[in-house]
Amino acid sequence: VDDSYKSTSISFDTRLNMSNNDYFGLGINGEFESAGSLNTSRDQVNILASYNKSISSNTKGCHYIQAGLGLGIANRSLDTLDARWPSQHDGNGGFDPNLPGGLFDNTSYSYGDISIGLNWLSTFTNGMQLKIGAAIHHVNKPSISFLSNDAQLAARSTFHGSFLFPVSSLLKLRPSFVHHTQGEHKETLYGFTSIWRFNQNTNSALDLGFWVENNNGINGPIANDYIVYGGYTYKHIKLGLAYDFENS
Image (cartoon, rainbow, N blue to C red; front, top):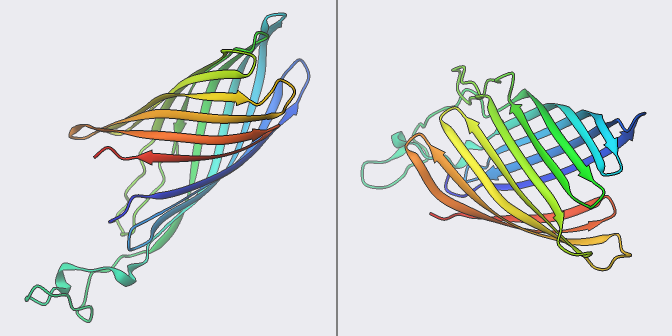
């Protein structure tokens, strides 16, 4: 793979109110990635559901425990038309596509993907909000391989948290962190989002964010990457764009 992944995601969620401040959350999201001259790709659609149980509610705010489930279907594929194999070198430093090359048992396959999560959410009447939670992705450890061997996708654990607080009547800040562990690999993101309302009577806001991404692989720490984000919110609709700067 000679290029970085190009990723696109889209999501939608809604809230169904119940009695006693409880509510259901329902959503769907899609993730689409591709990279390289072989167009190596991963496309996944997830159906998401959560139940949000009110623990306490008073004049200062509300507190919830949230349990969630994600059911997804994913497809991975590649195009071997432009693949080059060691057996296709002509011995003179050249490449002969007419010589036999390697073969994959599958150039496209699909699998199911299951995730579960548990969160704590506190919202306060002064505009503050606290979130902290944990999740396990790939609970079913699906098989992922273009070859006949039964390679499994390791389960990934996630811990995350954020704290939203007002700086002024028009500006809020949300520092946040996310930590992933999958096998011997670890990844931590930390940063913040600023939420600017244009005026006190509008439903529109401008979101600007910055995060640092720290990766640790089998051979130790890897250089940090940096993520910048810009978005626009109107009522319950949010549009955004993020860019990852590789520090390598």
